[in-house]
Length: 307
Length: 254
Figure 1: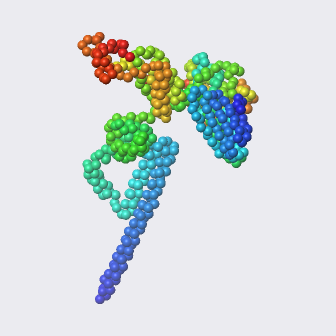
Figure 2: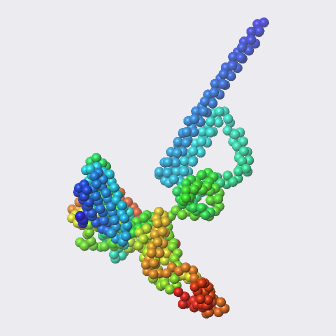
Figure 3: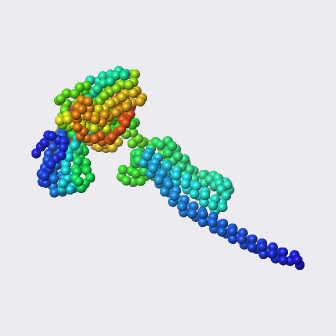
């Protein structure tokens, strides 16, 4: 009998301990959940602000591309830290999670090869830097200014204000022209003049036109190339250098100047000519003029005496 | 009225007009109630078309100042007679550079306003550096000289004395070189306008040149009064390419 109170006490103690443990466990769980919530509520906005700050700081000190990369590094790095810390706070062990992520990663990798390829291509684009944000590029017949280089794709804004999304993989695989990589650019104007014109006079005239255009750079000096004998014209190329900003202005200006100068100096810009022969090289094709006012006679024209 | 003495304050009564020619830049100003109207035309261009007035709403007591300023870019200039400067030797050359015309509006109740900043002559653009990198510059048609004569002084031009020092062991060809006009101050004595002395020390082809700006009226005209501060001040001088040029770009840029 003397032992009877012991089990009762033991049971009572056990109940009390279980309750206390249970209460402790419950309060610990609530505490962890609260801490995790605080981590998310404070950490995520903090990371967002830090990402924006890093982007602005790097952009002001270097260039927009560096700002973009820095902002994304801070953002993704920060979010990863917040996520890992939150999971640990909630009592998740990272080891099995990473193991499961590995298996899941393999499965997802097979399922999303294109996306993974785009991500890896994006890393190459960022490392190699064939272009940066604000560059003007041409890819597959599309020309536009780079507005962002993202994880999967690059976004361009075309001149008519459309947004074009090009997957990173496409950019790595295909030929891309960076139009604004270098600060100066050459405007090429191709001009044909009649065979009767003096080639050296045309060369001097074209160089003079370039010299007189204020947007044409004196150095590198403009150049005129006699490209050859065309079907109907002597073909010249006028190459004049200018800054990227003045490219269109010079291109328009030079063509207008050439037309005005040729008109003023009586230089003929010919349209395509065709002379038709039948039978022999010397006899011109016979032309019959048919019409109410025309007399029905045959007219044979010597091509050299044609008006 | 037309005035050929360009610089200084312009007294413009309400309703009055003022015209001035500086180089080939022709300026017209009018005061209408609390507005000042400005118009600039280029006289060397055959057909300038209709030129619009630029209107500035200012206090009634606003004053107009016409001031000279150094060019706002690098200048590329050729020497009249190209020469070689042997190592450890010095030479002095003079460059005549076109001034910019600034119209400033000021009043006790208003912060000073730069209403106009244009070159007195039409200047051609050129490129200084390599085809991959460099800077936009003005091409001077006037040549650098070894001496200064009185006929060089005109109201819209300033003379810039440049002391070239070849500190390298190699001979330096002085053919075409650059003048960093952004850092020049202007000094006036009568009709003569000078910049401060530029001292260019050539170190070696790979190192470029050290450039120092005197900041005072040059030895040729020590009594000159300062009329314009540099657009961009430099305290200790700078190191930059002064004698390089685009030799490889004369044909097709290859």
